[in-house]
Length: 319
Image 1 (tube, one colour):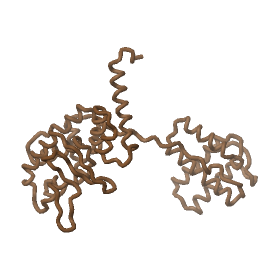
Image 2 (tube, one colour):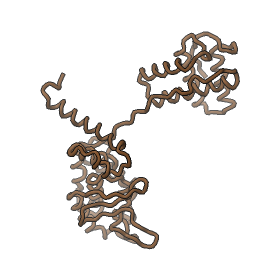
Image 3 (cartoon, rainbow, N blue to C red):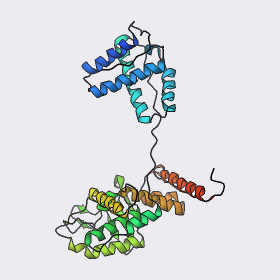
Image 4 (tube, rainbow, N blue to C red):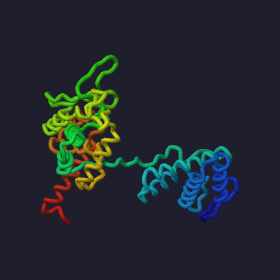
C-alpha cells in the first residue's frame, strides 16, 4: 500500500512514526481483518494526524493537541462526518498504544466532532405548489386519484404513510380499526402519526373537491378490499413508493425544476402556513410534532423567504 512521507521522530518504544503507524495498520489488516478499503482509510487518517503533529511524537500528544487539530480540520470546512471518522481512527490507534505499548491515556477521549448541520427541508414556492396539485390532465380514475392525493398532501401536511393509510371512512370491524380517514362534511382528516399519536387536520376546499371527484369514480378501480381510500389500478391500497413515483413524474411533466417528493409537499404546507400566520404552535399541532423544536426548522425557511423579499424590494439591499 502506498505510503506518504512522514515527519521523522520516534515513539515511546523507540520506533519511527512510520513504523508505529505501519504496525497498527498491519494489526488492523491481520488481527482485526478489516477490509482493504477500511484499513487504507485508517492509514490516511493517521498520516494526517502525524502531519498535524509535525515533528512531535504521536505518543506525546494530549487532549489539548487533539482539540486544536479538530478545530483546524473544522476551519478547513471539513464536514462533521469526516471529522468524526478521523477522531474514531485516532482513538483506535491510541487505544492500541495503551494496550501494547503502555501509553498512559487516550488523548482523543472526550473530544467530539462538531455537530452535523442539519440541512433545511426543501419546500416548493407557493406558485409551483399550487400548480403541482391543481393540474391533473384528465378525468381518468388514476389522474383523479393523483390530484386528490397531491391536494391532500399539500392541504393538510400529511406524511405519505399517513396518506396511504387512509380509509374511505372510519371502520371498526373485529380487530380492525381505522387509523385514518377523511370526513368530507367536516372538512377534516383524521390520522395516526408517529408514536400512534392521533390528530385532526383541516382540509381545504380544493382538496375536498378533488376528493369528491376521486370518490365518484373510485368504484371503477374497487375490487376486493373496500377499505382503502386510495387505490392502485389493480384495486389494492396504494403504497408510499407508488405515490413517490407518481408525484415525481407529475412534477417532471409540468417542468417544475425540483426533485419533488411527497414530503416536499409537507414541508411546503408548513412553510407556507407559517409565512402567512406566524403561528408556530398551530403548525406544530397540524404536523403532529411532539416537540416544538422539530417545527422550528420552518422558521429558518420563513426567514429565507423574508430575506429574498428584502433583497428583491428594498432599495438599499443591493450592494
